[in-house]
Length: 399
Image 1 (cartoon, one colour):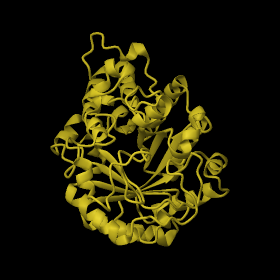
Image 2 (cartoon, helix red, strand yellow):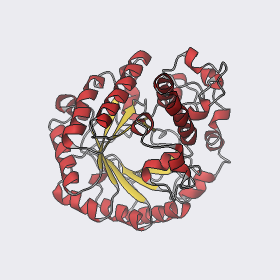
Image 3 (cartoon, one colour):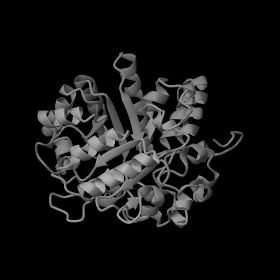
Image 4 (cartoon, helix red, strand yellow):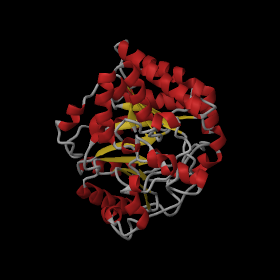
């Protein structure tokens, strides 16, 4: 996760994270990615059921009942363990988490245990009453998925009217005074919508947007040909930075992040080297704190059936099940060779990553994508768009 607004617009400094000792338990949410202990943010896919059928869904969710979801009591025990382990954020996802009847009870319990509870949703089921209930239990944030304006979004969601219902959900969250943001997955079919999405941020006064790079997992594994070329990705990143800065200069700053392509950090740094070298050096320090790919370290996932994964895209590999062993034990058990390697991934990368000067702030990018294309987890991520010249060490000390 790369904080475009934080880094490019200069809204945070390295000293901001250092002031809190870089401890997850003490850092405010907007600085959490710079923690030194990397206590994992946990994505809990509480259900596989969903009222939509998005073409790029990593969970392959559908509108049907699944018999193997963790029970409410299983969830309470899980939350107890996560809280004791020091997990700072529990993200309730799916499927569609709003379709789980005990969501409010589980999220409320997580808040009472001292965690920040957030949800990732398509927004179509958040009416005024639900939004008020989410506010009342102390929910920190609602992330609502939109992959374009009405025609494009509804096609991606495979449901006419999904866009309008999502906007209603956004408005209901805003009325209830819950921080709300957008989630947008970039691909060939919707990249041109990015300026319209920024306009929506401005017009509706939405707090935040996360731009996700396409990951070849779940139904998204069929969309490799829909991923942007390296050249187009660079254009899109420049556009996102330009539009972020434009809002900042208008006095309407928004939190803008990119997710799932850790080349974004070095790319932003290289742009700042040309525009503002002093700020570039501050950003480099922050990127070193961020550390790039945190799968198996600072981000983890628990499926609806209790299986534990390195992140939400690793469903083909489970390290264990919380019904058998607590998450904290599974997460720290490096007798599993892959878990051990993930926690020291910079030692295992191959190809151009091995000699990249940015390895220290990227950590080899997204390994699921590398595996999907090459069959080898440790090969270079094919979505890395940095040129060979840009990654050469030359006289530059490895970041």
